[in-house]
Image (cartoon, rainbow, N blue to C red; front, side):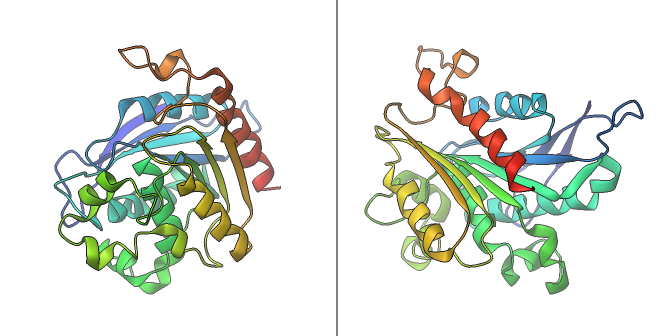
Length: 274
């Protein structure tokens, strides 16, 4: 495995911003020459990036036969659009190295949990906007470099409206809540260029209400964007893999019925590119 760390620095980045890659080595003994890559954005309310939603998730996708990468993006006091530009920069880096890393450049999927789901979905909504390409030194002709081929969103922060996770938007926008709150309410930004989505949430999530996902699913449906959605009846926020591998120090984070999400996502990815 080619396991490397790359600095990701755009205007406003904090020193720790980086991309960690988990690239399976190519072998003449195997028929697979190129693999999809899952680009992971851990959650943390835009105040941190959760370890529980980072490498453990990457290793699960790696075991499924994919390449993986984890973006440790800049959080507060960094504000929008810093983390989005870092994600766009990571996407461009992966596509520019696709041949060397044996990545199928048409099969790069962003995955995000909680606020990381908001970040992943933001790239899905804004990948073709000029401010994103220009922010990382690309031109209009380079927009396609930044387009995710799909989105896997785990209990994502989506709306800045009635069901908002206010802390995430306060950390992301600082004193620009009124100016940018509407733009970053992502259910209002879906269009025909938004990539297909796999989304899961729990009915009993008390931190980021399931209405965040429901609003997004409704918008995706209206726009005709292929979407798979799973709402589990029980489970607190921030489950990650929902098993002992991502259990918290105080014993939380296990919800057996929710462990199926990653296998369902695997099936979704496999059928997405048929």
